[in-house]
Image (cartoon, rainbow, N blue to C red; front, side, top):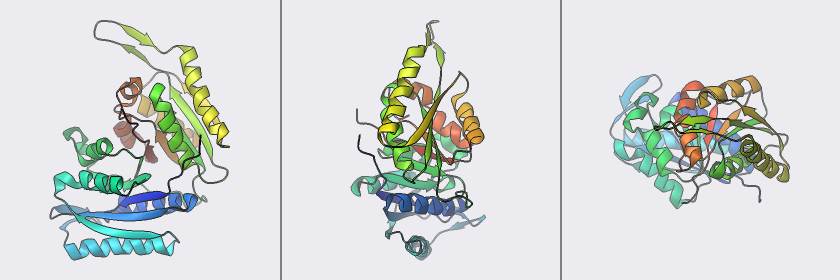
Length: 289
């Protein structure tokens, strides 16, 4: 399989501290992949939380913010252009997703506060809408990358199985663009009891086949990797704990936007991981149905 790269990146920014962190992550990913960046600021007349206060953003402030971000990227040697888009507060995610589609983006990067208030995710917040609307990978960040490291060197790929493997490993490959980056493939073994008492336990041979498929793809791409099985437990908490112990820079989660077994296991893991871990979270592409 051809090794994928994030060569065209969309950075959605809003001037929050989390959005500033997204700029740094964008620089790191863009340098590793020699990528170009489109900076998108969605402007509306709503109230914004910026620099610790709530205020109403003017059009000129939106343009100034966008230009500052483009300047920061250019100063880091990243080819960048920017645009301010107008959308009401209920269509921010749709505007970002449409821009990503039109530009054929390989990756969209956002700060966690830059796309939603995570406390409102149950109410179909913008974060949920963006995850549903995008087909390309989405990188969600809380904090700046570790400045003591040269790039990111440890990528944890959490996979379920079946159709989950390919998008997760493709995203992990693209994230592992830096020479010497290591990938840890993690599968959390699960069991289910249905409404009528039907129990499903993943067979050991199926688990090992899933991990073998993932590690073989990484090995073929020349990426150093290892695999581990974590036994049943709350998936997000288990993955977050392993990521902390292994000191992962980025967590990659598979295609939790499909209708297979992987989505049953990982359906809420994306949102749960955003609460359980402060590490950057890369949600893989959505495969066509």
